[in-house]
Image (cartoon, rainbow, N blue to C red; front, side, top):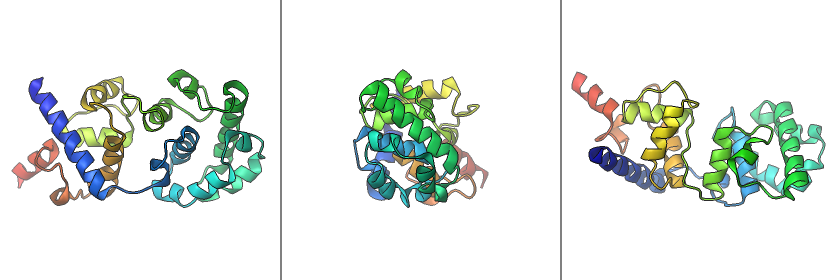
Length: 219
């Protein structure tokens, strides 16, 4: 177990150092505003960060508070979301979530996982992301990117992001659960640890990655 903890710490350090140098810059990563972070995470579902980045600032400028979003017609909200798809569903969920925040939480984003998950369009992942990125809570975060990362670096197989064993593992691996660790994993998978043709030669983890070690031995 001591050896595992040493590897966990080394991987965390390498990912965060890489992120500090080469991580992508998105506006929702440069705020602690819980509402702005919640909006960002809801928009990021089932689309790309690049697509969301093209509309995010304008969306926040148009609907800067839950009150404003709640009193806007769904059709108007949907028009702002056409470029990222699923605009009707997104608009309905965003407006309903904003209305609940205004009516039940005095316009403030709730802080508990249970309350966050009760909002339309907010599952366990988004609720956890808000807890980490907005409120600084040291809790695990698991999505498809994290599952892919774990399968490569630690040679661990999980059934998917809802696998409880994955969340339990990340609870141990994540340490203090620095937000930069999760952003670093997301960006590494997006730019370097690709599912097809990974760029192992420039990956900061190639000396500690189980998948790369095996691949090297085969050559």
